[in-house]
Length: 424
Picture (cartoon, rainbow, N blue to C red):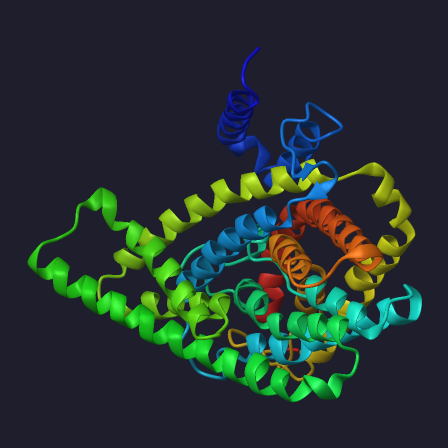
């Protein structure tokens, strides 16, 4: 009988061949590639062929999940930075600022209130649930993000920049929840959280993203002027930028995800030849797509019917409130008085605000934060509760957002593009 590893390689190779050759048809359907990967992952898990096993003797390998999702998020947030060519001016980034400063805390604390009032959690567990589920996902949201560096659409820009930033800026609240789990006397650690996890880590993330990226670009330019690198190897500069920026930032207790996103912005603006960052973007997106396959396969393989059913009503409550009330109302509040940059309208078109509210896609970032929490004190009944609510929320997001993304974006591009330029 063939080795399981060989069978896994065969299945993954066959899956990649099928989705690649069928991508032309799939792209025209109200169906995302992630849905296909999820279904295949379920069949490869314990309910199918049992080829992917993250549980050994009943113990879940959270560390492996953390490392895989960490790498996927890093690749994705760097790609988000590379896509954005808008000038670094507050007026231009106003929509991003609103989504991060207003919407993300609204989402976190509204979800925390749901956990505390309706799910029987203490405040530490509830805030941790909010921090895990609040970030939107830059990996699974490619259909609603910027398509290339020439795309200036504000909806796509807002969703791209939000996904690149809030996967990093949810970290302080994850730490807050972890601290509260370990010590319910907030006075013992609150000052440390403010000074280190909120102020220092964010500031260092921004500074390191700028410094490391600029240094790599400078070294690259000097060396390549004298002796150009092999063209086949040159794209690996993007991977080295990601890994060096992330590791060096983490060494000085900064937020590596934030630094990598900033590094992407810096790289995009540092070359006179615009083709260079574009080539890096194409390479990064290819790597991201490959890693996305593995991550969603793993998600499908770890799903278990009984615990999902046990927490089904709690998950349904969280999903309904998050998708239909918390995110849409949070977006509406955050965009009050927001004037579009590319329109004569005084405010965002209501349809655009509604789409911002709907496309709060949850995915790999939430899986990473969940795995991180498991490694830092989340366990027992609270761990099971938060885990299965998170898994179920991501699965529902993959399905409903995957089905709705294509038709809604076509509707947006067809109908709202004309209305944005109309005088109110």
